[in-house]
Length: 427
Image (tube, rainbow, N blue to C red; front, side, top):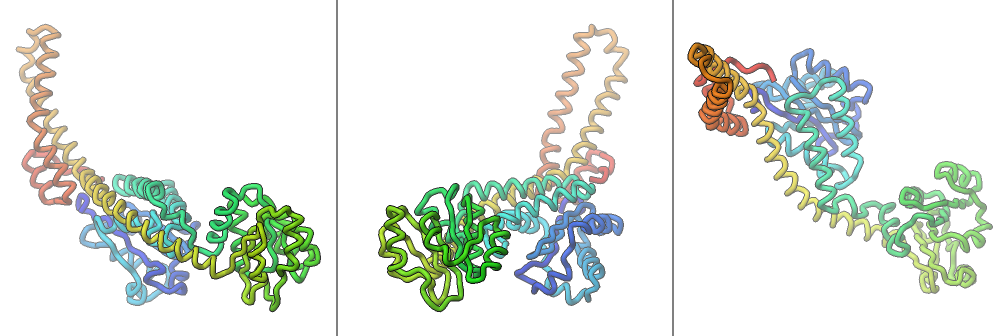
């Protein structure tokens, strides 16, 4: 516990609740401040942060130890018009060090639908910003959230958890990089309007591809896609011209025949002087004749190749995740001890104030004698009395910090009474 309070995480996610329920419980960014205020006004929590994304709704809060977040759980059900029993079946709760560990795992993308995805870190940062702006965090949650962001950055720095491709789009980028190195300044041609083709094109544009040319059986559809990607629309009968100019070709159509055959591509590759051409065929049936791969300078991959790369990436991310989990465990343990030590701060301050008051009282009582001393001698006496009290209190203050780290509120109370310290102020 933290000074009679308990740190808890209450929420539901893609792991515990269907999307229909997550939609009902989701909290828009505009409404988060009013919920933070409601937690405070109803005395459900002393500090709180709300994280609401498409995959999770979580509340990190400092609550009364005897409540354990039950009040917040009831509030969520009432606020969204849900039977408490129905919502409770999908909620998870973590307390103390487990709550810290869960937050660190979430911020580090270890609990995400796609392990290693980068968006969650920004979402956690935004949730913390909103809570700060509305004075919903203080002695405990503010340093905890800062530490969560720091741990997430450490995980990304010390592991490759976010660097392995795990989608068809990112796999296409990875294969293209293996051929070209950087994609900046490259030109790409997208043939068709299939979803996977668009995903690969979008990923490549995100990695610096300079221009995207879009060809489709229906020119109007090509125009719409070109606008979506900020590219150029062309007719299918212009393929030969553009195949000579681009570096990357992605096909994703519903055609039942090969659009690019070896016979068609052979003179094009000669005209290119066999400059490398990266081709990705995402269509089933295939749009590119497999024998195109035999042409000099042509590098052809199909949807199975990209899926294999994505699966390898997912496996590697899982391997990196085990390293990340070790970092999170170590950091969570250290952080919770640090938060516990903060609960001792008011008692340490009270004991120190009491000792200083006693020291000053004794100096004042001895004033008639001390007045006979020179200013330099009085300074020596003052410094000596400070040093004596500091040494006398050293073990007690160290014990107070240890009790705080251990969450031993009763031990802190006994120590406080032993030194005659007043009740500590609210944190």
